[in-house]
Amino acid sequence: MRPLQISADTAVKLAEKLHVPIEQLMHMPQHILMQKLAELAKEDAAKDKPDEQ
Image 1 (cartoon, rainbow, N blue to C red):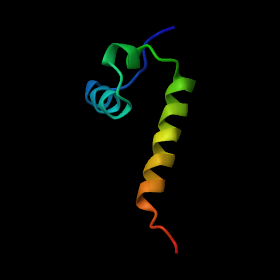
Image 2 (image 1 turned 120 degrees about the vertical axis):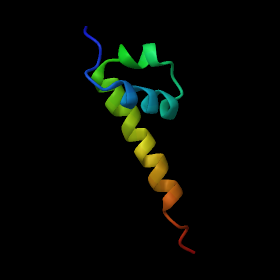
Image 3 (image 1 turned 180 degrees about the vertical axis):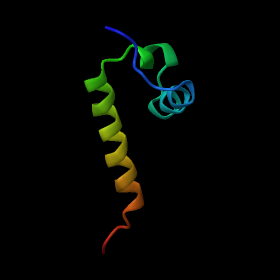
Image 4 (image 1 turned 60 degrees about the vertical axis):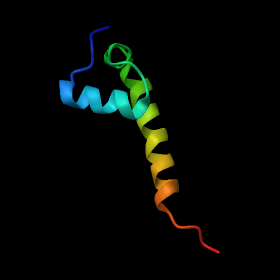
């Protein structure tokens, strides 16, 4: 499996956001990365959405 084809800047930002080392991120299978990004998006949406009471 080859490393992800993303820029160094993008890799650093993703590693910080996902709380994983850059080396692990670069060798992470693409489908796993997409799953983790979807989970982050759900969490961010839940934070941004005001509680309706």
